[in-house]
Length: 120
Image (cartoon, rainbow, N blue to C red; front, side):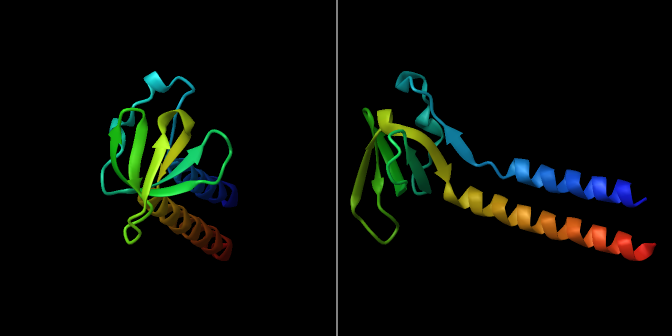
C-alpha cells in the first residue's frame, strides 16, 4: 500500500515538474525562428547566445532583425536585442504559474504520503 501511494505521489510531482517548462528555445539559423508567439505587453526574460547577462524586457514589437521593448513597465528605457543573439525567451508570468503549480503539487504529494503513513 505504501509503495503504490508513494509511486502515485512521485508521478504527480514529476508531472508538475515537467509542465513547469515555459521556455522557447531558438535555433542557430535565425530564418527558422518564429517570433510570432511573443505577445506585446508581456514581460519576457531573454537569454543571450554569447552567455552575457539575461535581459528582462517588456516586449513591444519586432523590426527587421531586432526585438524591441522596454526595460520594464515602469522603466521606459528602450531595449533592442538582435535576433541572432537570442538563445531562449522565457515568459515570466507563465513561469510563475508553473512554479506555483509545482509547489502545490509537492504539498499535495507530501500530504498524501503523510496521510498514508498514518493510516497503517
